[in-house]
Each structure stands twice: as structure tokens, then as C-alpha cells.
Image 1: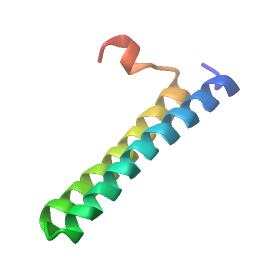
Image 2 (image 1 turned 90 degrees about the vertical axis):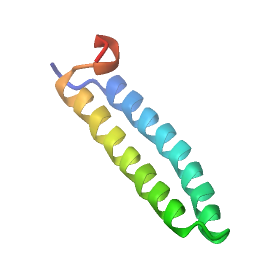
Image 3 (image 1 turned 60 degrees about the vertical axis):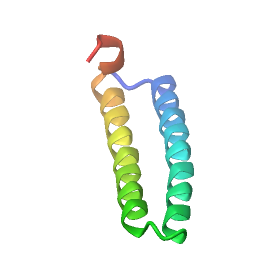
Length: 74
């Protein structure tokens, strides 16, 4: 399946929106670190960062392969 500009733009918007959500969570996690929960804050930042990367890779894969796991119920 060919990559369409519409799909690429849609994926980029989705990735950007998800990244902004997680960035907000990371700011909250930094607040936890400042309040003294260093272990919990760092752990949450790492988890949020991995979620950003995983989501970006999955959406990019969908655009390039033409599959939509969310629509397939996977």
C-alpha cells in the first residue's frame, strides 16, 4: 500500500498530540522528584519516555505498512 500524504499528516498529528500528553506527565513526574520521590519520579519519566517512543514507532509502522491495529481490534 502506498503512503498517502493524508495518512502521514494524520500520523504526525497523532504522534505530536500523544507526545504533548506524555510531556505534561513528565513535568508532573519532575515535580515528584523535586518533592523528594526521586525513585518514583525517575521511574515514571522513563516509562513516559518509552511510551512516547513506542507510540511513535507503532504509528509510523502503521503508515508504512498500511495496517491499523486499533481498527483490527489488536
